[in-house]
Image 1 (cartoon, rainbow, N blue to C red):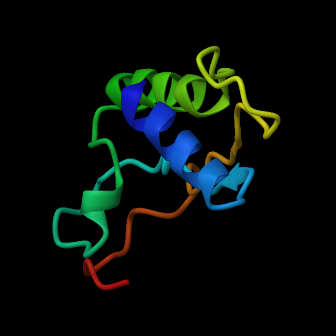
Image 2 (cartoon, rainbow, N blue to C red; image 1 turned 135 degrees about the vertical axis):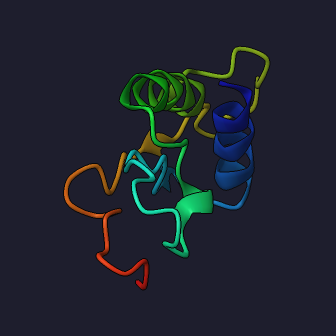
Length: 90
């Protein structure tokens, strides 16, 4: 949740209102070079962490009283047919 909140705040400060995160692919091939981008290999854990990350990104920042947008849009990605290369090479 807090990682999403921070990403949202920093993205909005840079002028971006849309974040291409979180990665919801499962880390099924340990040799894959992009395992670090995932929340792991357990579908339940990945789904719960994804929900909280998205909530953190998209929840309005009540403490921000400026005129700029107080939340960003999350774009969940790579949750279908992405993280299972045969050899682990991307």
